[in-house]
Length: 119
Image (cartoon, rainbow, N blue to C red; front, side):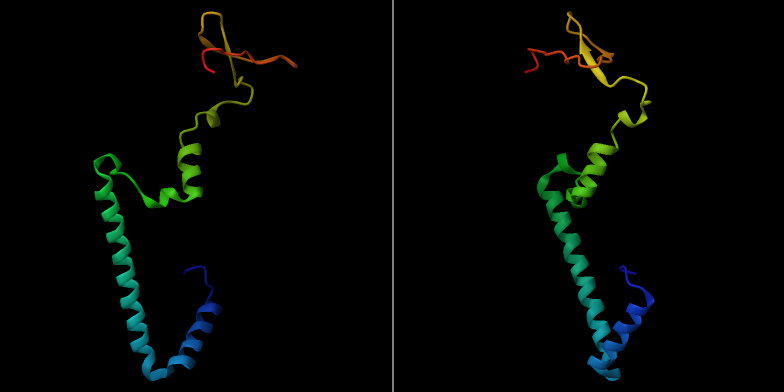
């Protein structure tokens, strides 16, 4: 639960008992629960407002995708077909004189081809 072990949870309960006392602890816990529920509702409403404001083009928008870890995982690792390629298969593409691309492997010290149209 929130990355806390049992010792930390027990310590927090003891501190809460010392701070609030046994009479006011249930009221404080209920107030904390209401506050957490209100914060969740506000966050969900903000997400919904962002989605409706962006329009139908961004219907699948998820704010958690803006987290750099999720962004890299979703856009760089999920759609990458190179992970399925065997290490023995070549990864360098060469340009033929016709402009068609084929898979090839460069020799040691060989300079990759320069495509004037691509630059």
